[in-house]
Length: 429
Figure 1: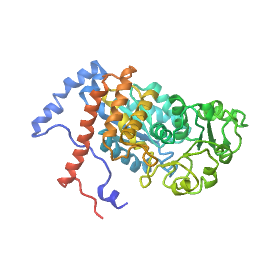
Figure 2: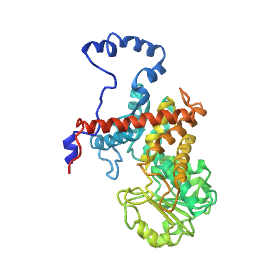
Figure 3: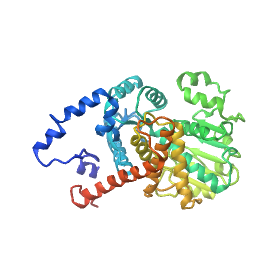
Figure 4: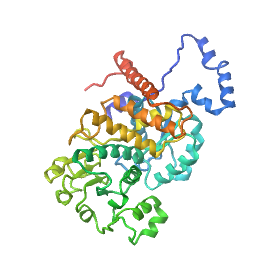
Protein backbone atom coordinates (compact mmCIF):
# COMPACT_ATOMS: atom_id res chain seq x y z
CA UNK A 1 0.00 0.00 0.00
CA UNK A 2 2.83 2.40 0.89
CA UNK A 3 4.73 1.92 -2.37
CA UNK A 4 1.64 1.84 -4.59
CA UNK A 5 0.68 5.23 -3.20
CA UNK A 6 4.23 6.57 -3.54
CA UNK A 7 4.80 5.51 -7.16
CA UNK A 8 1.24 5.74 -8.45
CA UNK A 9 1.58 2.56 -10.47
CA UNK A 10 4.36 0.27 -11.70
CA UNK A 11 4.76 1.10 -15.41
CA UNK A 12 4.63 4.14 -17.68
CA UNK A 13 5.17 5.07 -21.34
CA UNK A 14 8.42 6.78 -22.30
CA UNK A 15 9.61 7.92 -25.76
CA UNK A 16 12.01 5.73 -27.72
CA UNK A 17 12.89 8.33 -30.37
CA UNK A 18 14.90 11.55 -29.92
CA UNK A 19 13.04 14.86 -29.58
CA UNK A 20 15.49 17.77 -29.45
CA UNK A 21 13.17 20.50 -30.70
CA UNK A 22 9.54 20.98 -31.65
CA UNK A 23 10.53 20.65 -35.30
CA UNK A 24 11.23 16.97 -34.68
CA UNK A 25 7.50 16.37 -34.38
CA UNK A 26 7.21 16.97 -38.11
CA UNK A 27 9.02 13.63 -38.44
CA UNK A 28 7.34 11.70 -35.66
CA UNK A 29 3.89 13.17 -36.16
CA UNK A 30 2.44 15.26 -38.96
CA UNK A 31 3.28 15.59 -41.82
CA UNK A 32 5.96 12.88 -41.78
CA UNK A 33 3.79 10.19 -40.25
CA UNK A 34 1.37 10.23 -43.20
CA UNK A 35 3.71 8.22 -45.42
CA UNK A 36 4.01 5.57 -42.72
CA UNK A 37 0.24 5.34 -42.37
CA UNK A 38 -0.23 4.99 -46.12
CA UNK A 39 2.36 2.21 -46.23
CA UNK A 40 0.50 0.31 -43.51
CA UNK A 41 -2.83 0.96 -45.23
CA UNK A 42 -1.48 -0.84 -48.30
CA UNK A 43 -0.18 -3.76 -46.21
CA UNK A 44 -1.34 -4.16 -42.60
CA UNK A 45 1.63 -6.42 -41.75
CA UNK A 46 3.86 -3.36 -42.17
CA UNK A 47 2.48 -2.21 -38.79
CA UNK A 48 4.80 -4.81 -37.23
CA UNK A 49 7.80 -3.20 -38.93
CA UNK A 50 7.01 0.51 -38.79
CA UNK A 51 5.41 0.84 -35.33
CA UNK A 52 5.94 -0.58 -31.86
CA UNK A 53 3.16 -3.09 -32.46
CA UNK A 54 5.85 -5.75 -32.93
CA UNK A 55 6.81 -5.44 -29.25
CA UNK A 56 3.47 -4.55 -27.69
CA UNK A 57 1.00 -6.88 -25.98
CA UNK A 58 -2.11 -6.50 -23.85
CA UNK A 59 -2.34 -8.12 -20.42
CA UNK A 60 -6.09 -8.63 -20.57
CA UNK A 61 -8.45 -9.74 -17.82
CA UNK A 62 -12.01 -9.35 -16.63
CA UNK A 63 -11.04 -9.77 -12.98
CA UNK A 64 -13.11 -12.91 -12.44
CA UNK A 65 -10.35 -14.97 -10.82
CA UNK A 66 -7.53 -12.78 -9.59
CA UNK A 67 -4.68 -14.53 -7.75
CA UNK A 68 -6.27 -16.14 -4.67
CA UNK A 69 -8.75 -13.29 -4.34
CA UNK A 70 -11.49 -14.55 -6.65
CA UNK A 71 -13.94 -12.39 -8.58
CA UNK A 72 -12.86 -8.91 -7.46
CA UNK A 73 -13.67 -7.06 -10.68
CA UNK A 74 -11.62 -5.35 -13.39
CA UNK A 75 -10.60 -2.24 -11.43
CA UNK A 76 -9.22 -4.28 -8.54
CA UNK A 77 -7.31 -6.46 -11.00
CA UNK A 78 -5.34 -3.47 -12.33
CA UNK A 79 -2.50 -3.62 -9.75
CA UNK A 80 -1.95 -7.27 -10.63
CA UNK A 81 -1.95 -6.58 -14.38
CA UNK A 82 0.55 -3.75 -13.81
CA UNK A 83 2.78 -6.18 -11.95
CA UNK A 84 2.59 -8.59 -14.85
CA UNK A 85 3.48 -5.79 -17.26
CA UNK A 86 6.52 -4.95 -15.13
CA UNK A 87 7.73 -8.56 -15.25
CA UNK A 88 7.20 -8.68 -19.02
CA UNK A 89 9.39 -5.61 -19.48
CA UNK A 90 12.14 -6.45 -17.00
CA UNK A 91 12.55 -10.14 -17.87
CA UNK A 92 11.51 -10.15 -21.52
CA UNK A 93 11.88 -6.60 -22.82
CA UNK A 94 8.20 -6.71 -23.83
CA UNK A 95 6.02 -3.59 -23.71
CA UNK A 96 2.90 -4.89 -21.97
CA UNK A 97 -0.18 -2.77 -21.31
CA UNK A 98 -2.59 -3.66 -18.48
CA UNK A 99 -6.08 -4.03 -19.97
CA UNK A 100 -8.83 -4.82 -17.46
CA UNK A 101 -12.11 -5.23 -19.33
CA UNK A 102 -15.55 -4.78 -17.77
CA UNK A 103 -17.03 -7.89 -19.39
CA UNK A 104 -17.72 -10.99 -17.32
CA UNK A 105 -19.59 -12.53 -20.27
CA UNK A 106 -16.96 -14.44 -22.29
CA UNK A 107 -18.44 -13.59 -25.69
CA UNK A 108 -18.43 -9.88 -24.87
CA UNK A 109 -14.84 -10.18 -23.62
CA UNK A 110 -13.84 -11.90 -26.87
CA UNK A 111 -15.46 -9.17 -28.95
CA UNK A 112 -13.54 -6.44 -27.08
CA UNK A 113 -10.23 -8.22 -27.64
CA UNK A 114 -11.00 -8.69 -31.33
CA UNK A 115 -11.74 -4.96 -31.63
CA UNK A 116 -8.36 -3.92 -30.15
CA UNK A 117 -6.28 -6.49 -32.09
CA UNK A 118 -4.76 -3.84 -34.44
CA UNK A 119 -2.96 -2.21 -31.50
CA UNK A 120 -1.10 -5.30 -30.34
CA UNK A 121 1.38 -7.94 -31.43
CA UNK A 122 0.03 -10.43 -28.89
CA UNK A 123 -2.54 -10.97 -26.14
CA UNK A 124 -1.75 -12.34 -22.68
CA UNK A 125 -4.95 -13.46 -20.95
CA UNK A 126 -4.79 -13.29 -17.19
CA UNK A 127 -6.95 -14.21 -14.20
CA UNK A 128 -10.08 -15.33 -16.05
CA UNK A 129 -12.26 -17.89 -14.31
CA UNK A 130 -12.56 -21.51 -15.44
CA UNK A 131 -14.06 -22.83 -17.69
CA UNK A 132 -14.51 -19.43 -19.42
CA UNK A 133 -10.73 -19.19 -19.84
CA UNK A 134 -10.65 -22.32 -22.02
CA UNK A 135 -13.43 -21.06 -24.27
CA UNK A 136 -11.92 -17.58 -24.59
CA UNK A 137 -8.44 -18.89 -25.39
CA UNK A 138 -9.79 -21.35 -27.94
CA UNK A 139 -11.90 -18.75 -29.74
CA UNK A 140 -9.27 -16.02 -29.79
CA UNK A 141 -6.54 -18.40 -30.95
CA UNK A 142 -8.72 -19.38 -33.90
CA UNK A 143 -9.96 -15.89 -34.77
CA UNK A 144 -6.98 -13.56 -34.21
CA UNK A 145 -3.88 -13.27 -36.38
CA UNK A 146 -1.60 -12.61 -33.41
CA UNK A 147 -0.46 -14.93 -30.58
CA UNK A 148 -2.91 -15.44 -27.71
CA UNK A 149 -1.67 -16.93 -24.45
CA UNK A 150 -3.41 -17.66 -21.15
CA UNK A 151 -0.63 -17.69 -18.62
CA UNK A 152 -2.54 -19.47 -15.85
CA UNK A 153 -2.93 -22.35 -18.30
CA UNK A 154 -0.03 -22.33 -20.72
CA UNK A 155 2.68 -20.64 -18.67
CA UNK A 156 2.14 -22.91 -15.69
CA UNK A 157 1.95 -25.97 -17.93
CA UNK A 158 5.23 -25.17 -19.69
CA UNK A 159 7.09 -24.44 -16.45
CA UNK A 160 5.73 -27.61 -14.88
CA UNK A 161 6.79 -29.72 -17.85
CA UNK A 162 10.32 -28.33 -17.69
CA UNK A 163 10.56 -29.08 -13.98
CA UNK A 164 9.10 -32.56 -14.40
CA UNK A 165 11.52 -33.47 -17.20
CA UNK A 166 14.43 -32.80 -14.89
CA UNK A 167 12.85 -34.21 -11.73
CA UNK A 168 12.36 -37.53 -13.50
CA UNK A 169 15.97 -37.46 -14.71
CA UNK A 170 17.16 -36.96 -11.14
CA UNK A 171 15.15 -39.91 -9.78
CA UNK A 172 15.83 -42.08 -12.86
CA UNK A 173 12.26 -42.69 -14.01
CA UNK A 174 10.89 -42.95 -17.57
CA UNK A 175 8.27 -40.31 -18.47
CA UNK A 176 6.36 -42.89 -20.52
CA UNK A 177 5.93 -45.20 -17.52
CA UNK A 178 5.34 -42.94 -14.52
CA UNK A 179 1.94 -42.55 -12.90
CA UNK A 180 0.92 -38.96 -12.28
CA UNK A 181 -1.84 -37.59 -10.05
CA UNK A 182 -3.17 -34.09 -10.65
CA UNK A 183 -4.80 -32.74 -7.51
CA UNK A 184 -7.08 -29.98 -8.73
CA UNK A 185 -8.70 -29.90 -12.16
CA UNK A 186 -8.75 -26.19 -12.88
CA UNK A 187 -7.09 -24.19 -15.64
CA UNK A 188 -3.46 -24.92 -14.81
CA UNK A 189 -3.73 -28.67 -14.20
CA UNK A 190 -5.97 -29.27 -17.21
CA UNK A 191 -3.50 -27.41 -19.43
CA UNK A 192 -0.55 -29.22 -17.82
CA UNK A 193 -2.13 -32.63 -18.35
CA UNK A 194 -2.78 -31.83 -22.01
CA UNK A 195 0.77 -30.55 -22.56
CA UNK A 196 2.27 -33.63 -20.88
CA UNK A 197 0.20 -35.85 -23.14
CA UNK A 198 1.51 -33.99 -26.21
CA UNK A 199 5.04 -34.38 -24.87
CA UNK A 200 4.63 -38.16 -24.64
CA UNK A 201 3.31 -39.03 -21.19
CA UNK A 202 0.69 -41.81 -21.16
CA UNK A 203 -2.78 -40.37 -20.41
CA UNK A 204 -3.83 -43.75 -19.07
CA UNK A 205 -1.27 -43.31 -16.30
CA UNK A 206 -2.74 -39.95 -15.25
CA UNK A 207 -5.46 -39.32 -12.70
CA UNK A 208 -7.12 -35.93 -12.25
CA UNK A 209 -9.03 -35.06 -9.10
CA UNK A 210 -11.59 -32.30 -8.73
CA UNK A 211 -13.90 -31.41 -5.85
CA UNK A 212 -16.06 -34.46 -6.63
CA UNK A 213 -13.18 -36.96 -6.68
CA UNK A 214 -11.25 -38.70 -9.42
CA UNK A 215 -12.19 -38.09 -13.05
CA UNK A 216 -13.20 -41.21 -14.98
CA UNK A 217 -15.66 -42.06 -17.76
CA UNK A 218 -18.20 -43.67 -15.42
CA UNK A 219 -18.74 -40.67 -13.16
CA UNK A 220 -22.44 -39.83 -12.82
CA UNK A 221 -21.87 -36.18 -13.77
CA UNK A 222 -20.24 -36.90 -17.15
CA UNK A 223 -23.22 -35.62 -19.15
CA UNK A 224 -23.16 -32.40 -17.20
CA UNK A 225 -19.40 -32.05 -17.68
CA UNK A 226 -19.76 -32.57 -21.42
CA UNK A 227 -22.13 -29.59 -21.58
CA UNK A 228 -20.51 -27.25 -19.04
CA UNK A 229 -16.78 -28.07 -19.16
CA UNK A 230 -15.84 -29.89 -22.33
CA UNK A 231 -12.10 -29.61 -21.51
CA UNK A 232 -12.43 -31.46 -18.22
CA UNK A 233 -14.78 -33.98 -19.84
CA UNK A 234 -12.26 -34.84 -22.55
CA UNK A 235 -9.58 -35.58 -19.96
CA UNK A 236 -12.01 -37.68 -17.94
CA UNK A 237 -12.48 -39.85 -21.04
CA UNK A 238 -8.81 -40.38 -21.87
CA UNK A 239 -7.14 -40.53 -18.43
CA UNK A 240 -7.36 -42.86 -15.41
CA UNK A 241 -6.83 -46.09 -17.27
CA UNK A 242 -7.16 -48.09 -14.03
CA UNK A 243 -10.54 -46.43 -13.33
CA UNK A 244 -9.56 -45.44 -9.80
CA UNK A 245 -12.61 -44.23 -7.89
CA UNK A 246 -12.44 -42.07 -4.80
CA UNK A 247 -10.30 -39.13 -3.82
CA UNK A 248 -6.68 -38.23 -3.25
CA UNK A 249 -6.06 -41.12 -0.83
CA UNK A 250 -7.02 -43.72 -3.44
CA UNK A 251 -5.37 -41.91 -6.37
CA UNK A 252 -1.89 -41.52 -4.86
CA UNK A 253 -1.50 -45.19 -4.02
CA UNK A 254 1.69 -46.19 -5.88
CA UNK A 255 1.87 -42.95 -7.87
CA UNK A 256 5.25 -41.53 -8.90
CA UNK A 257 4.28 -37.87 -9.23
CA UNK A 258 1.76 -35.64 -7.49
CA UNK A 259 1.07 -32.25 -9.11
CA UNK A 260 -1.15 -30.14 -6.88
CA UNK A 261 -2.76 -26.90 -8.00
CA UNK A 262 -5.72 -26.81 -5.67
CA UNK A 263 -6.04 -24.52 -2.65
CA UNK A 264 -3.54 -23.00 -0.23
CA UNK A 265 -2.28 -25.16 2.62
CA UNK A 266 -0.70 -26.34 4.69
CA UNK A 267 -2.41 -29.63 5.44
CA UNK A 268 -4.29 -29.98 2.15
CA UNK A 269 -1.92 -32.84 1.32
CA UNK A 270 -0.91 -34.96 4.30
CA UNK A 271 2.19 -36.95 5.17
CA UNK A 272 0.08 -40.08 4.77
CA UNK A 273 -0.70 -39.17 1.17
CA UNK A 274 3.01 -38.90 0.39
CA UNK A 275 3.87 -42.13 2.17
CA UNK A 276 1.37 -44.03 0.00
CA UNK A 277 3.24 -43.12 -3.18
CA UNK A 278 5.88 -45.14 -5.04
CA UNK A 279 9.58 -45.03 -4.18
CA UNK A 280 11.31 -41.65 -4.69
CA UNK A 281 8.06 -39.71 -5.14
CA UNK A 282 7.98 -36.26 -6.73
CA UNK A 283 5.69 -33.62 -5.20
CA UNK A 284 4.79 -30.36 -6.93
CA UNK A 285 2.73 -28.39 -4.40
CA UNK A 286 2.03 -25.24 -6.40
CA UNK A 287 -0.68 -23.39 -4.44
CA UNK A 288 0.17 -19.87 -3.32
CA UNK A 289 0.86 -18.25 -0.95
CA UNK A 290 1.17 -21.49 1.07
CA UNK A 291 1.74 -24.82 -0.72
CA UNK A 292 -0.67 -27.69 -0.13
CA UNK A 293 2.02 -29.39 1.96
CA UNK A 294 5.12 -27.73 3.35
CA UNK A 295 8.33 -29.11 1.78
CA UNK A 296 9.79 -30.18 5.12
CA UNK A 297 6.72 -32.29 5.84
CA UNK A 298 6.80 -33.84 2.38
CA UNK A 299 10.48 -34.73 2.74
CA UNK A 300 9.85 -36.24 6.19
CA UNK A 301 7.15 -38.43 4.64
CA UNK A 302 9.55 -39.77 2.01
CA UNK A 303 9.41 -37.34 -0.91
CA UNK A 304 12.55 -37.31 -3.05
CA UNK A 305 11.92 -34.00 -4.83
CA UNK A 306 9.57 -31.21 -3.78
CA UNK A 307 8.73 -28.12 -5.83
CA UNK A 308 6.52 -25.18 -4.91
CA UNK A 309 5.54 -21.85 -6.40
CA UNK A 310 7.52 -19.93 -3.78
CA UNK A 311 10.93 -18.32 -4.07
CA UNK A 312 11.93 -19.04 -0.46
CA UNK A 313 12.12 -22.79 -1.15
CA UNK A 314 14.29 -24.61 -3.72
CA UNK A 315 12.68 -25.66 -7.00
CA UNK A 316 10.35 -22.74 -7.59
CA UNK A 317 8.05 -23.68 -10.49
CA UNK A 318 6.98 -20.25 -11.65
CA UNK A 319 5.45 -19.27 -14.96
CA UNK A 320 7.62 -16.13 -14.83
CA UNK A 321 10.36 -18.42 -16.14
CA UNK A 322 8.27 -18.95 -19.28
CA UNK A 323 5.94 -16.17 -20.36
CA UNK A 324 8.47 -13.31 -20.87
CA UNK A 325 10.62 -15.59 -23.04
CA UNK A 326 7.78 -17.12 -25.02
CA UNK A 327 6.45 -13.69 -25.97
CA UNK A 328 9.97 -12.41 -26.69
CA UNK A 329 10.48 -15.18 -29.23
CA UNK A 330 6.98 -14.97 -30.67
CA UNK A 331 7.05 -11.17 -31.05
CA UNK A 332 10.49 -11.10 -32.62
CA UNK A 333 9.34 -13.31 -35.51
CA UNK A 334 5.96 -11.54 -35.65
CA UNK A 335 4.19 -14.83 -34.95
CA UNK A 336 0.56 -15.48 -35.81
CA UNK A 337 0.12 -17.93 -32.91
CA UNK A 338 1.93 -19.86 -30.19
CA UNK A 339 1.70 -23.57 -30.88
CA UNK A 340 1.90 -26.51 -28.44
CA UNK A 341 5.16 -27.48 -30.15
CA UNK A 342 6.58 -24.05 -29.33
CA UNK A 343 5.52 -24.52 -25.70
CA UNK A 344 7.31 -27.85 -25.57
CA UNK A 345 10.37 -26.24 -27.15
CA UNK A 346 10.30 -23.63 -24.38
CA UNK A 347 10.05 -26.33 -21.70
CA UNK A 348 12.90 -28.32 -23.20
CA UNK A 349 15.11 -25.23 -23.46
CA UNK A 350 14.47 -24.38 -19.81
CA UNK A 351 15.16 -27.97 -18.74
CA UNK A 352 18.38 -28.18 -20.77
CA UNK A 353 19.61 -24.89 -19.32
CA UNK A 354 19.31 -26.35 -15.82
CA UNK A 355 20.88 -29.65 -16.92
CA UNK A 356 23.96 -27.83 -18.16
CA UNK A 357 24.40 -26.28 -14.72
CA UNK A 358 23.88 -29.58 -12.93
CA UNK A 359 20.41 -30.69 -11.88
CA UNK A 360 19.86 -32.16 -8.43
CA UNK A 361 17.09 -32.81 -5.94
CA UNK A 362 17.09 -29.11 -5.08
CA UNK A 363 17.73 -27.66 -8.55
CA UNK A 364 15.42 -28.86 -11.32
CA UNK A 365 14.67 -25.51 -13.01
CA UNK A 366 16.63 -22.25 -13.30
CA UNK A 367 15.88 -19.38 -10.98
CA UNK A 368 14.45 -16.08 -12.21
CA UNK A 369 17.89 -14.50 -11.72
CA UNK A 370 19.58 -16.70 -14.32
CA UNK A 371 19.14 -14.16 -17.11
CA UNK A 372 20.63 -16.26 -19.91
CA UNK A 373 17.75 -18.72 -19.68
CA UNK A 374 15.28 -16.15 -21.00
CA UNK A 375 17.16 -15.55 -24.25
CA UNK A 376 17.65 -19.28 -24.79
CA UNK A 377 13.95 -20.02 -24.31
CA UNK A 378 13.03 -17.14 -26.64
CA UNK A 379 15.37 -18.50 -29.31
CA UNK A 380 13.86 -21.97 -29.05
CA UNK A 381 10.33 -20.57 -29.38
CA UNK A 382 11.21 -18.32 -32.34
CA UNK A 383 12.99 -21.06 -34.27
CA UNK A 384 10.16 -23.55 -33.64
CA UNK A 385 7.46 -21.11 -34.76
CA UNK A 386 9.56 -20.27 -37.83
CA UNK A 387 9.89 -23.93 -38.77
CA UNK A 388 6.12 -24.39 -38.42
CA UNK A 389 5.25 -21.52 -40.73
CA UNK A 390 3.73 -19.48 -37.89
CA UNK A 391 6.15 -16.54 -38.25
CA UNK A 392 5.79 -13.50 -40.51
CA UNK A 393 9.55 -12.89 -40.29
CA UNK A 394 11.23 -16.28 -39.62
CA UNK A 395 14.50 -16.47 -37.72
CA UNK A 396 17.02 -19.14 -36.83
CA UNK A 397 17.90 -20.07 -33.26
CA UNK A 398 21.20 -18.18 -33.39
CA UNK A 399 19.63 -15.09 -34.93
CA UNK A 400 16.99 -14.90 -32.24
CA UNK A 401 19.42 -15.68 -29.44
CA UNK A 402 21.47 -12.62 -30.35
CA UNK A 403 18.43 -10.39 -30.85
CA UNK A 404 16.62 -11.48 -27.68
CA UNK A 405 19.76 -11.07 -25.58
CA UNK A 406 20.13 -7.48 -26.74
CA UNK A 407 16.48 -6.56 -26.20
CA UNK A 408 16.28 -8.11 -22.72
CA UNK A 409 19.60 -6.57 -21.65
CA UNK A 410 18.44 -3.17 -22.89
CA UNK A 411 15.27 -3.38 -20.78
CA UNK A 412 17.21 -4.14 -17.60
CA UNK A 413 19.87 -1.53 -18.37
CA UNK A 414 17.18 1.08 -19.03
CA UNK A 415 15.60 0.58 -15.62
CA UNK A 416 18.99 0.52 -13.89
CA UNK A 417 19.89 3.81 -15.60
CA UNK A 418 16.62 5.42 -14.52
CA UNK A 419 17.26 4.33 -10.94
CA UNK A 420 20.91 5.42 -10.90
CA UNK A 421 20.01 8.89 -12.20
CA UNK A 422 17.19 9.29 -9.68
CA UNK A 423 14.45 9.50 -12.31
CA UNK A 424 13.01 6.37 -10.72
CA UNK A 425 13.18 6.69 -6.96
CA UNK A 426 14.86 3.88 -5.05
CA UNK A 427 12.82 1.86 -2.59
CA UNK A 428 13.17 3.06 0.98
CA UNK A 429 12.75 0.98 4.09
